[in-house]
Length: 123
Image (cartoon, rainbow, N blue to C red; front, side, top):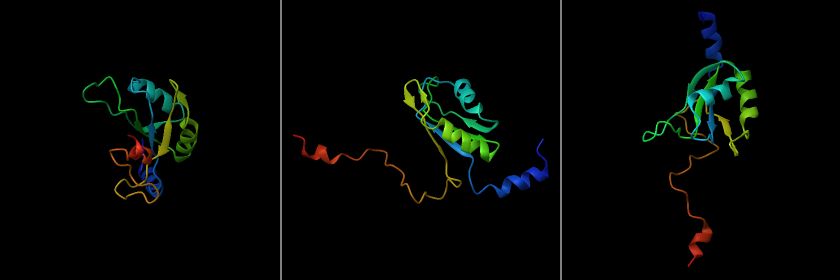
């Protein structure tokens, strides 16, 4: 079990998140299959595969995972990112350490795609 010493060691590393978003997953993969894929790199502390409400057999195409160790996270992210599954490349990246703080570099994409300039000229 995790003792008090472990908790102290964990809190010092809390600034950098070990939470990873595994995106572009084929929606038909189930929890077991995705968990098997990501746990090959190390022990998972957290795993969730959000499902489509209308069709629980299908996921929303991404999983949120967290590894016990930071060094495992780095290895897993670089190994899983762009890995092809069912002909699609995965998009794997670390989630920001603090979800409440807006990311400085990348603005959140709007729900609706902006029209391409070319579409303005179509007849």
